[in-house]
Length: 218
Image (tube, rainbow, N blue to C red; front, side):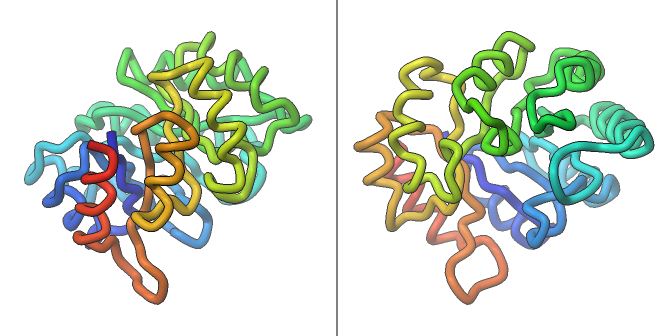
């Protein structure tokens, strides 16, 4: 399974026209992804059939949100749900940088059964493995993680352990590209990957890069 993270509509259309299995639609690459524009999402859903998961994240930073920001998350998730989002990507931490059970459960309930991915906020927590267990108990479908490290290659040993625990639920991300995906597959024993497919010195997702990664993942 190959998911392409798309931070603007040009990359989204490139990925939706490619062999990618789904996209994560968001905005603001510099922040690692924020909630995208609703009208752009509606346009994409009207034109393409590939599943689109929507990032729900109102601000950059620590994944600790104010009351106002959390209210905006609820409003955004409900709006994208009603507009036909195929799934959601979010993750709320508390002041101790641990999983905020109450707030994540509220958002999961609002998703109304649509699959939810806990994003790389999990890599900020103190105990990656206990956090992953709690996330799965809450009802998330997948966990997007680099194994608690800056990149997936750096975190590959942790990722291997996570995949052993949750073989169908770990989505491997963090500078994944065609040049390193084979090593990751060999080490981690998984074919579930997340990448922006943006090459060095480029701005948008590269269709050939998507094709090369998809060939590796099968």
